Length: 427
Image 1 (tube, rainbow, N blue to C red):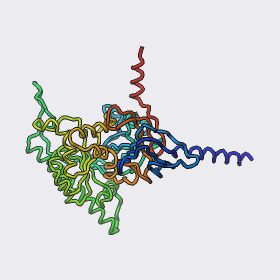
Image 2 (cartoon, helix red, strand yellow; image 1 turned 90 degrees about the horizontal axis):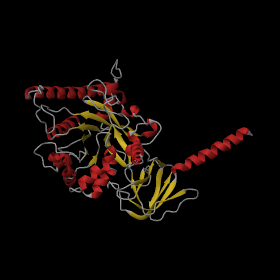
Image 3 (cartoon, rainbow, N blue to C red; image 1 turned 90 degrees about the vertical axis):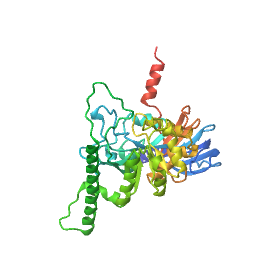
């Protein structure tokens, strides 16, 4: 009898738990991103996935109805470049797990180092960002970036695409690297001559080419079943890149580096994405012709060069869009990841169409990372990553009222809000 009672109780609890990610949002304006807005619309979610959207959706029996009349429903936003979960306080070495010794570490998987309890997660999530790319740094081939949800008890729960891309810090010709550098009286800092910088650059580039050639030889030996073949974890990790299954994200900021990265990708026959491409506007036609997507950094920045137009960071996204280049936005850090929507909004005031700015933090990002069948818009069959707002999520005044990740309501409380309230109420 006790055994039967326990089984009934277990089934009842399981049934109740299963309703947590099944509901109907009704009465708000639905913004699918992939299609036209739906006034007074509804979104039906079952088992964490969207099963129906439209103007008239009847709630199935037993499914809770959430009234969002007067509010707006958008897909959760995606930050395409962070170290969230990998670095807590950058100046405290013990809280950062982003880099490893050596220049070539393709076997490193950022996903297994993600800390689900990071304080950066609820802060970023509270502003409508439901997914991020968390990637390693350092060296030349840094390792494998992960696309994760910003909710979950473990990194296994959080993973959307555990290996979303391989990260490459493309070699650059460097002499003086400080932006708007000023000479400091009495400072005697040795600087590399152009000849020394060129030799170092060519040496790094040669090492990079040799590493890829080594990976290709490894692939041939493995396919041929060569006698005495031994698995090499570093070279094994490169196989999906060589086969075009895993994109190679190349960090290349300046025009010369971008052109070299494009050439390198063609020579090696790789599927590349160029990240933090500040001067991509100078090579927009070539990027479009070769169908190479970009991850753009923050727009709320100073120009790269002293003689650049003052508003170049604001106008560049609009220029790239006109050229037909696909791009998404990334914060390239943790501290201001929550400001991702405002980086996109700044470009709208300088020529980027609003709908394209919204896509750059939702659907475009999902398409670049190969998960547009799972996230990035409000469509049937996708995960219910949804935000309910009182206005446009790209506006600073807008408040996130509710948020769902894989259909589960997430807590919008965070450390910054608690500190704000603490000092607001100080007596």
